[in-house]
Amino acid sequence: MLQQFVTVQDFGGKPLKRVLMTTSEQGVHVADPGMLSAIKFGISAPTAVNPRHVFNFDEPIFDDLMSQWQAKKETCATTWAKLGQFQASDHDDDCDD
Image (cartoon, rainbow, N blue to C red; front, top):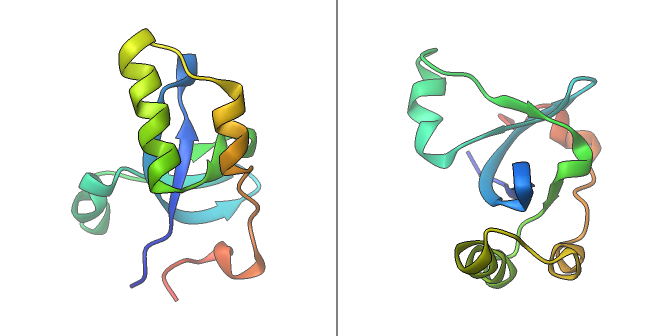
């Protein structure tokens, strides 16, 4: 299964690297990469996130956001804008294909 990563803007602006699971009317369902086995075995479940807090993933920009967060516990809106808002496509409704 090919994993698509997204960046989630957590409370206070903290950037989180997450795996896109599905999209629905409830939001964008994402998972911590370290929890995929627990999700597979039903021990955990993906989290639904408001789409406005989900951005595309780009490793260098994510690293920049993490540096900002670690230095000041805040991040810059301009840096987030570089990622671009995540836009669900038709095939994102079920990422297990």
